[in-house]
Image (cartoon, rainbow, N blue to C red; front, side, top):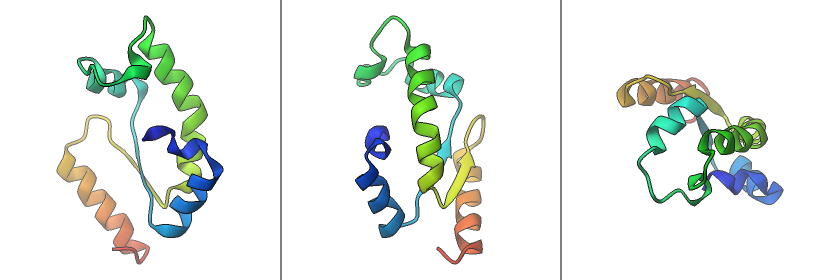
Length: 95
C-alpha cells in the first residue's frame, strides 16, 4: 500500500529490487478518484482532504526518494502516462 514507504526497510527493498515509478497525483485528483470508494478506511472521516494532505506531506518525499521515475498523472490519459513511463525507463536502460 501507499504507506509501505514509511518503513526504511521497505524503502531499501524497493530501491534494490526493482525500478520504482512514482505516479504523482494531486490531493484534488486523489479526492476525485476516491470520493465514492468505501474501501479507503483512512479517508472515512469528516476531513478526507485534510487526511490526504497530511499523508502526502509525509509520504511524497519518501516516494521521491525511492523513485527511479516520477510521472505526473493529473488530467492525463492512461496511455499517455504509460508511454511516458516506458520512454523514461528505456532512456535509463530499464525497460
